[in-house]
Length: 367
Image (cartoon, rainbow, N blue to C red; front, top):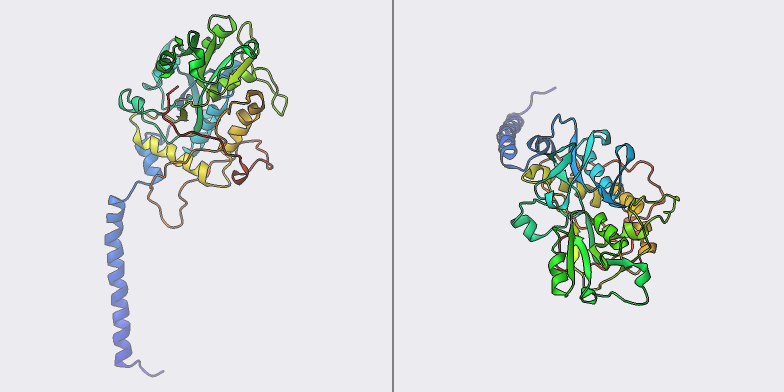
């Protein structure tokens, strides 16, 4: 073959030189990008102190049927429980390594839950905890993006139906009404002319209602729905076990102008953990193959609606998540999908087929 011409040799030398220059630039730029870019998911796990963790402590309610309830043999069930499992799965922690601990409303900001005869600090609080500015600014709670939207409502004994209609808090004027001690509902009740009776657990309020010591109970509709549903069966014939004395049928009242309640996860000062929780919620909301949220809603809340009309139990769609920037290569996905809930039905309602809920968008009262 004839020797390449001088011009060809020059082009070859220039091409080799260009490749060398590009390689040098890439080698110089990559450390800069790594240094100034957002963290990777793996780095967030390390910053959150979760690398090598054997278990995850989560503070939850233990007396709210359909939301979070503890049964014998340390069995936990409810919507918040399934959301906790969903988040733990995203963090790489198996269900068997999740430790649920009962937490009172007044301890949710400090993340102090009961363990044996004492208290411990939990990693996460997933306990029907409404996001409010006061809790963020004054009490130090650090919330994830919301994972459920509901609203404040009222329950009375069903025996009052037909005699007294409750369409607003003002209809409770002059009555004793029980609510959670830490809820700002107490102030709204006072403004409406009612006498608020505070308790640390909503089941204690329901017991007062059964015993005739209060006229009504008010808190979030999703919480009250389980008590109204009572021993009614779901589609699989399963029933809640409320476990209170002298139980009576209840009526759920829609008070119309109630504030919207957006529930969030409190991660405390662990901002890396908050970002990971938001990544899990983002994956749940945006990945069409990820049905963990919908499965949790269907199994615990959707079927209760027929027993709680005309009050809506909760919005039937996951609230819009917060997008967290993470550093990744082009071949990496934004967020790892959470495994589908065991036993989920392939015929479940799709996102596009869900019926919307009339969220009013008002300031949360904070239950």
